[in-house]
Length: 459
Image (tube, helix red, strand yellow):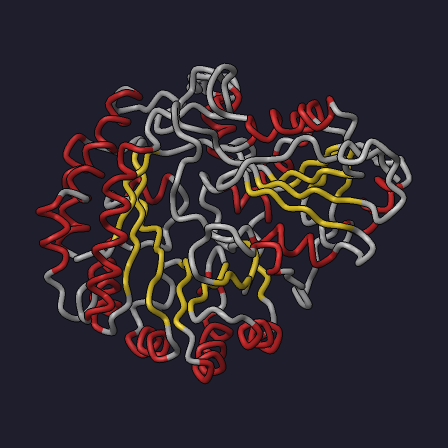
């Protein structure tokens, strides 16, 4: 039973849960930072696990304003490192009104001692096994300071309440989880830190049950390494093909030198993949513990994917010890020559809880104490001291790489790929729309401070 500011009387009907997906922040003078927002799948899972007697209200801070006047029995806020500061600001407003707040997500798990300073409770790890108990504790005013989730293995029966996303401005595709974690040990990866280098796969029957239930023609298979289990991936290709869905995912290079494997992917409906190539320098790949990436295989992998019409989103990271001044230009040229559909040229980010962060902190190379909470840090800034050039030089070179790749001449040159990027009228439209959007985004987010600042139009 909670007091209602809507009526001025005590409510005696169903308890209320407010779920919030925190944003990174706002650009000055802009209501929202628009990008290609996807449905936050974890919010749908929590909503589905919430007992029917609870009212669930969901706010996606990236696309809509939050109603702080609502009273609730519990507010659950999902935070990542870039959105932690904003999440803490949201929590403070609800707690000021006497509403208890619990944090969950990657950042809350990797920095629980920090998160609890801004909330009544923190959920560490996966919440599925704990969620109904947490709600019951909140309802009876006995919320614990910390809950530690039990790893669910095997992954099965993961419910998703997609009605939560109705009426919000998301990409028109459904997210379906196929696995969690990654077996590799890349030193920069928060996924590795969260899941301790483990990988779990849902059963094919469980995945297909969800595929058959979603209405969207387009699906994003949420998996930090879709090819973490090649045999399982092949079985999924065979089963998903009958539903005539068009799907995309993110994966490692594992299996992609096998033309038959790539052809099976395409035949099952795969239209796009995100691949972390990371670097064109072998010493850099070794230093990040990503020896699975072999430079001599990159072109063959990309050729295999282009041949069957699968779009490639290639990602590259700079700021490693073996970077040279010419590496940036060579990387852009490589992405252009290989006709990548889109690409990202980002600086290295030391996320708390990762091996990389611990190494840089121990060496005294961090430029901020908790950069994600600093009032001075801005999106696109390099928060550590690189070895071969200054932080500002790395930032500017990454920006130049993006500008070069998304320049009009570059977009036109990459369009000259009849098999893939512009292989059909639909492909041409998609290619132009997405490249135009990312061309605008090159400078749109740059310089945005994390969280909201007093005196802006943010709430």
